[in-house]
Amino acid sequence: MAFTRRQFVGTVATGVVAGAVLAPLVARAPQREREARWGRDAYVKPPRSRVAIVRADAYDDRLDAALREGLALFPLDVRGRRVVLKPNLVEFDPAGVINTHPALVAAAARVFRSMDAREVIVAEGPGHRRDNEYLLDASGLGAALEDAGVRYVDLNVDGVRRVATRSRFTGLSELWLPETVAGADLFVSMPKLKTHHWAGATLSMKNLFGIMPGTHYGWPKNVLHVKGIPNSIVDINAALPVRRFAIVDGIVGMEGNGPIQGTARKSGLLAFGEDPVAVDATCARLMTLEPSRMDYLADAGAFLGNVEIERIEQVGESLDRFRQDFAVLDRFQSLKPARHDLAR
Picture 1 (tube, helix red, strand yellow):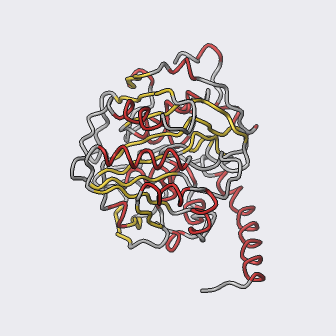
Picture 2 (tube, helix red, strand yellow; picture 1 turned 90 degrees about the vertical axis):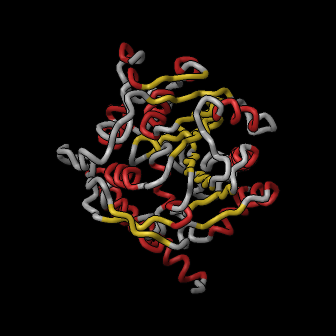
């Protein structure tokens, strides 16, 4: 369906009003009871989870080596497998801060292909823009993938598969997942290291909002926002039926009013891991945020993965070397640990 400019402006205005309505709903969502909302026999938490931090100073030709260094610390065998990379592609970003950097996405595709993956696909379903072609062009990701010879899939309009939820934080009994994601042998979440004005932080688990098709969940995935962002993060991650991995772009992240209007913060790192809960907990600590105080991590840490630092085997560079005090909005100052708790 073609839009006139007047219709387009009207649609944008409606989205602004909807955002104003959604904000208080999202803010209230964390105030919920904490009874178990998952099948106790459906999940087995790993006794320990490994998370790697690798130094990466710039988006240059050293990225391939940094990725190989991080991936070598995990037992990943992708020979003959289909690998789906899911970057964080949100909005046109002239400053290069909002989205996962295209150079990193292209480098990851090259590295996984060099590991004899049968196919590497980059896939995303942006929530703020329906025009994927515009975003690919404006962000530079389209050109980077074309140069790398990598196929891109728009998850907003991909074929879908109905998957039963295995946790009930949203109250939804089923989710519609894109066939490209559900059919992956390895799904790699590649978020940007960012604060978030509604969730506190947006990392590998929140990045999965972008796999939910807009044709079913609206723009910007309004159904999930109304159900509560923390609730939706947990249910989506609990339902994903494929092997997972995370590579977090922390070379230049974002602090303050993320995920779009924040300020660039250089951290000079990549974070890797198979347990998305442990990866996000580690990245929260890198930003000097206490993960157990984030609703989605507190809930996911009860059954999906490890939040406690004692249960995370941190390899590569030390967390303390790269920890920075990221600015957050006033409503999230409670996520900041007391100074004497920083070693925890």
